[in-house]
Image 1 (tube, rainbow, N blue to C red):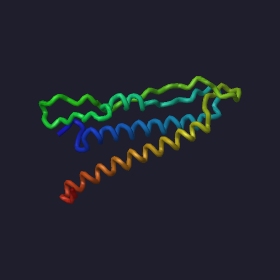
Image 2: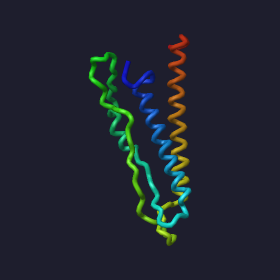
Image 3: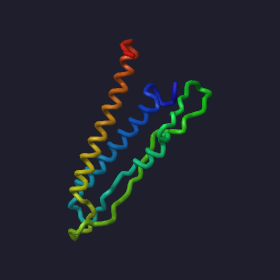
Image 4: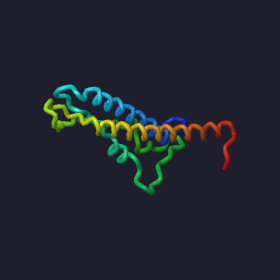
Length: 138
């Protein structure tokens, strides 16, 4: 059994991804809420590069740990994100850097990608449930 629990490293990756997307959604909501606050600097949560670097290269098989004495996998979770403030104010005179249209577009994209990760995790859980119940098809 791996250190990642019953769903393995894929499940740990998806859970970490969903947590990061949830944090991003909260930050986007805070940006939207402060769109009219003078001197407010919009924030961004960036994590895609960190996730990409943590995953094995295309075509490489991920290492599976089937025994307690085996070497640990190179991927460790949770992967964190970089929180950045956006310094460039949009030209409305109050030195606020929130672009409401960009924030709404980011929110929509983030929500779609969160839903995709949640559906993927649900599919993995359903497969595990079928295996446990003995209903797995070949």
